[in-house]
Image (spheres, rainbow, N blue to C red):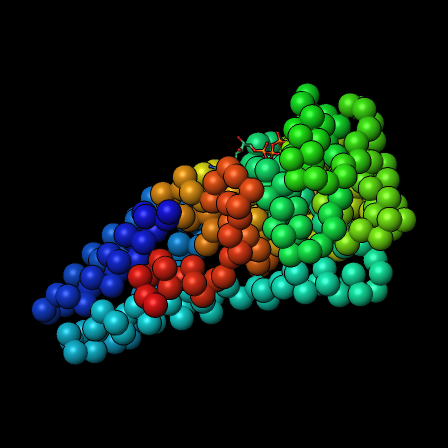
Length: 303
Ligand SMILES: Nc1nc2c(ncn2[C@@H]2O[C@H](COP(=O)(O)OP(=O)(O)OP(=O)(O)O)[C@@H](O)[C@H]2O)c(=O)[nH]1
Ligand SMILES: [Mg+2]
């Protein structure tokens, strides 16, 4: 995971191994660093923000080997990334769900994003995660567009032993979502997970439909599901969804297959919303809670 981004960061910390450093050498390393970030799918605006911070840092230092130790550079890079890139308040989702449960109300989460990013699979994984922690969960199939969507979610529900609310294809997705919330209220279920159809951020009708679902069910949380493999595209999708419907947090999927790693850094920076989970495979256990400190430390190979 994220090998390219790790390599980009270590290209910078390698500065410290050189005996003497001329301004030109530092420039060269910074240039390579910038290119390596771009190649890791870090969005351009994020590369600019990060490299200008690092430049200030490095050029402000006396360029002697004693000040520019590798450990020192790693520490600085790590705090810059943590301070500048993970400013978003983390969300303790399980605590929020517990709080609503105490009030006797279901917690409603709507999953949104473009086609094929992993929304339905993430819902199944998340439902499994919640069930293991003792919460009762109901799934709502508010994807009434894509052929097979209802069967896909129903199959997951059967495997996981969960109730699913679905209507026919072409039905109003907002009505399906509302039915699920009403069912959960009546049967005292803890969590409603609403699966929505994949929609291009450029499709006005579908974005309006998404907005209607949100208006009708007033979810506690809107979760953007982004595909790590889409790199910079995932970043522009996140921006557009942010503009249309807004969202509170993100899940990044297919991280197991992502050698680059730029999308995670960029989505958080560009939207200022936290990442809740990483999808790291296709089975129900492959959902990892995301911790920004651990993420940055692993990128920099620090404990
Ligand atoms: N390797 C890997 N594959 C994943 C992950 N998450 C989802 N997938 C795969 O991605 C494909 C699409 O997943 P879906 O959950 O159907 O995506 P979706 O966003 O619901 O798709 P639409 O409903 O068509 O918009 C499936 O083959 C999933 O198995 C992940 O974390 N890692
Ligand atoms: Mg789906």
